[in-house]
Image (tube, rainbow, N blue to C red; front, side, top):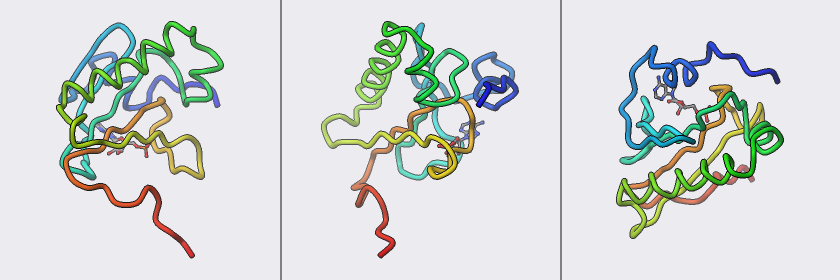
Length: 121
Ligand code: AMP
């Protein structure tokens, strides 16, 4: 899928719409999700035109990929969720219900988070 730079996260990166920023460096921007699903629900997005993890790992340099993943860890430490634990989730593509076509990692924390996936059987 080609990157569409009119998506909402591209607009946040360009400063066209606001966000509640948590952390920022050369590789990533982290901000609170607008519809939180847990007491802590933060999104970490790469500062580049990547649709998905597939796109990021196929197109970006190892330095950028590493810097982005370090930013996720730094954001979690900054949120002080490491001691009690947290979950990261990245939805990629249709089966995962990815809504925004700019790669993002969700950080969920602040309460016991239950099983990883709901059983359908
Ligand atoms: P996903 O289903 O993984 O693509 O998740 C997209 C997430 O982006 C959802 O949890 C939305 O609540 C969140 N979201 C959409 N627009 C905004 C926004 N302007 N600021 C913060 N979070 C947003």
